[in-house]
Image (cartoon, rainbow, N blue to C red):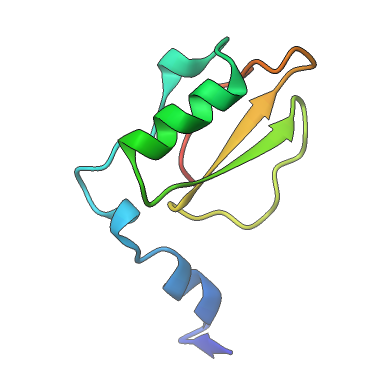
Amino acid sequence: MSTNGIPRLLLIGCCRPCCRHGHKNSWPELVGQDADKAKAIIEKDNPWMKVVPLPARSVRPDYSCCDRVYLLVDENGNVTEVPIAG
């Protein structure tokens, strides 16, 4: 289903409180940090966020929303890129 040509999922998915101003949505300080520690920090900074770890150099899923952040993690368990919501 869609509304005015926009898939309903996209309309619903990106109207959560995490999308509103005032919540942190980028964590450059976590590059090189342990992924479990990074996940905990992100969830503390923005409790609406769903953190999804992925292997480094993975193709991120096509679904993107402000309530999700992908952690790209190397073979040592460290974050390789700046985690950004969306």
